[in-house]
Length: 131
Image (tube, rainbow, N blue to C red):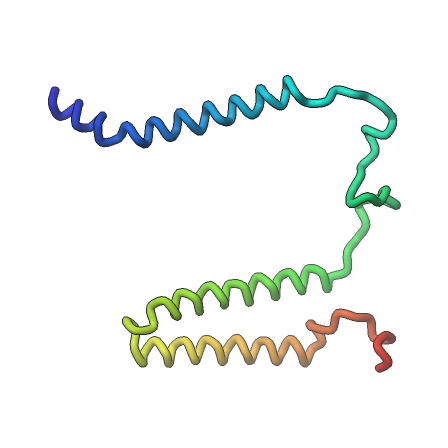
């Protein structure tokens, strides 16, 4: 019996936290139902974004460059995460870690140079910018 009491005493904080989160969610849902506006009208059904009424369809095809830029962002964002982890543990990994991080940076730099050469980083159309 003492073991069960000790187990309850050890995990009461977690149970209280879960209860508090559920109670807060229920409170916010209930308060929004009670206090939320219920007006109807023609303007309420129109999509409104940033103060500008929408023009055209939301199903317009995007240029592949948007996806390419997104992929490059993810790649170089992951690079930053790896380098941050290396910077935190730089004293523990020593020169071996420094050489490994340098090789990692050089490989990513080669990829960036390649992307620049094939035009993946050219954001503007070819006829703009006085070129």
